[in-house]
Image 1 (cartoon, one colour):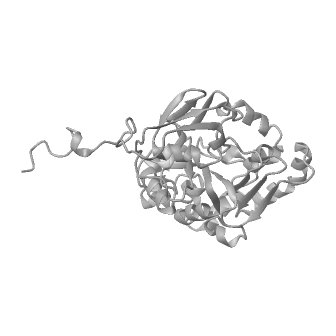
Image 2 (cartoon, one colour):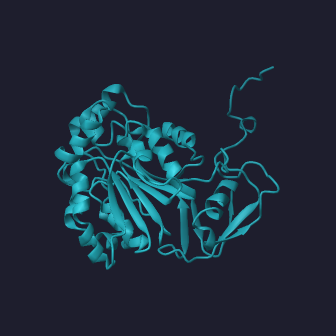
Image 3 (cartoon, one colour):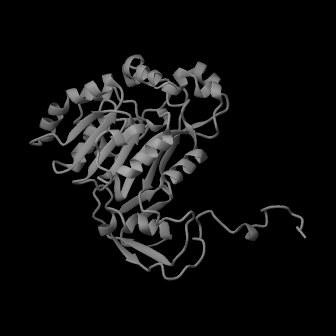
Length: 349
């Protein structure tokens, strides 16, 4: 798909989020209260030109350096700027001139609104496939976010590799995007409206997992997911039986320490509390809701995600990697020879 099509769609065709033909935008009712409060401090023009499909506001961001890939009119940048505080920084990147113009127009307005002495946010005009050309220092960001943009990229692996290189060791990519339940036909992928609506460029979820691991993110974790409704009947007919989902993933840069599967080393963690907006329960991902004060068994990968990242001070860690107990029970993976339904029912010899 020609990148000019995407630029025109987001710079000229779409004027407000009401022009979208899918249920892509995350509704206010789905947001935690503190995020709603952050958005009350964002300029109306910025909010009106928001086209994201999810929430990209992870916890524990004070003083962090954050990069937003495909920042558009700046809504998420301005929300995150409040959380990182005056000592942190949020950098937004976008290729659409009209969107960048709106974002930059309101920097001073938001700086005053937040009560900061100087701006802690800035916007760069550039391509997320070419992050190495923007003068950003490798290994300098704590968190990278993106909201419904990577599906629009013509080189998704380049985006993921570029993000991996810009993250600090232990850093995190926390992003929302649209995924399909199958590989899409060329007629769908090349349709300019379907592409602009974040459907034509949506990856089959299993292909995304392969690309993420190839880029260095070895254990992608789903945080939230929801089905997307196609509100336009003409577009729905073109898509046929394909189903689409908005999914928020978190990917950690852990220097190749993670394993392909969840392995059991007899480890556990205890959440001590202290994370703002997660005092009683810390939600690492969709399957790990860790209650404060409770011994919580974890696999080796999860142990690293908590121990070698910005979350380490909020946990007590039990055990080490000195003894292996096999696959972690309950992770959904088992040895094929233990499964009576695996393979042929007849003996092989």
